[in-house]
Length: 200
Image (cartoon, rainbow, N blue to C red; front, side):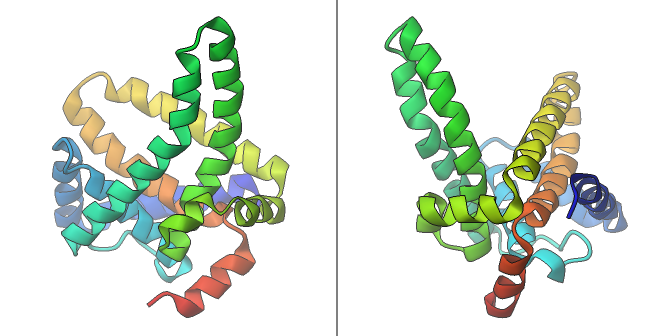
């Protein structure tokens, strides 16, 4: 799937949040509350995991399970960023190395997080050979283009959200859903088909 189609379909999926206002309000409330907002990343994991089986954002349920899934996402991010952060404290040279290493780990870690969500297995987030294979099947150019695009969108979302915490809570829900669906589409199609046969 080309990047433009990925973004278009993800946007269309995201707009369907408004079809269930009650569900949307719950998601916004959860996103506004610190720590509890990890539940939203668990919700995102469900969207990624179920992939094409969802034609619209699902009704949020199993809050504890989603909160735990959200913590797993946070743990993966922290583990991938730990080494660059530690190296960055060494000094100027350390900062340069940390930036380079951080960029490399971002490339691997993003797909690793998606892989974890798809397989519902924490160790898969660090299965480097599998992750590199997945990126190769997606196409390095397409994948990095997707990373850059979603990063730019993230910066815009953060800028808009900085206006007020309520705005951040609302727009954050829409963006997380958009990003989750987009992550599903960037995952190799063959892998999607395999997981659809095995997930629950």
